[in-house]
Length: 316
Image (cartoon, rainbow, N blue to C red; front, side, top):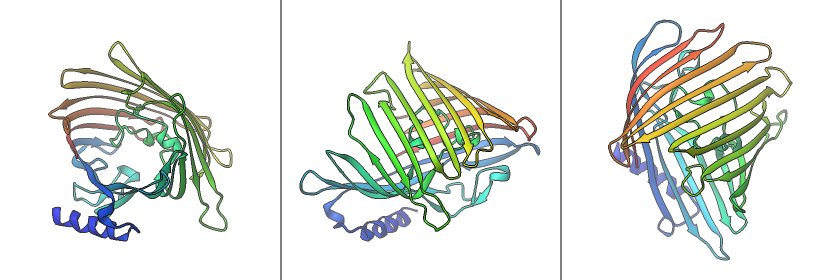
């Protein structure tokens, strides 16, 4: 596997219009695997799941006039080796490596502009409020808007008094399609290290078939990190209207972090859906943690879903 990663790194770096040794290049990644009991309406079964494990290459190269060229090429890795992603009716076959964020762009006093495949601003606006991102309780399982799209141009402004503007333009890429726009205003630091609060408001217009408005807030009160999110979405033809909310909380005690999250999706003409998750992380080191969680989805007229898991995550 190490030799495979090295070959990929060489291929990616040689494809850039930069001398490989003139740029600062970082190889990073995350390995996340869980043993879990899963039940999505047809009886429970055990499985090993790769939860958005990934490897990536990113870097920067200083140019003249205060400009910096930045680039990233990130891939999801199917570490469980079963060639499947998702669950139930959402399960699909995947390659060992699947493209995630991949772009090149320029940064300077004006902010940064990126071209390629990237998370939309609405997706980025969630910050760290979704405590179970990449796991079965990820907010994307009940809501739309968690889009990582190709053919995009992204712009982020410099920060002004902790405020920042972000815009994603999604090119139509065909004669019959429409351009999409994703806009967000951010306040504070999503990791809550440089500010006591993080907040954002984001709007998608004709992005992946939906119009969406989302507001997010997170802060720390007496050692408890509290988060909340509200969302309104509808298809671009005005159908499938939904109002939803999500709340989350976490508390760290020595090496253990206790976490809980509740999410709801109320459809104007259709099912009401909700999900609740409880979990805990145990830090073995800064780079490595053990975790466990239980997730239960109430899907109204559709089959309910339940997941009980224990796993390990290593980042580098």
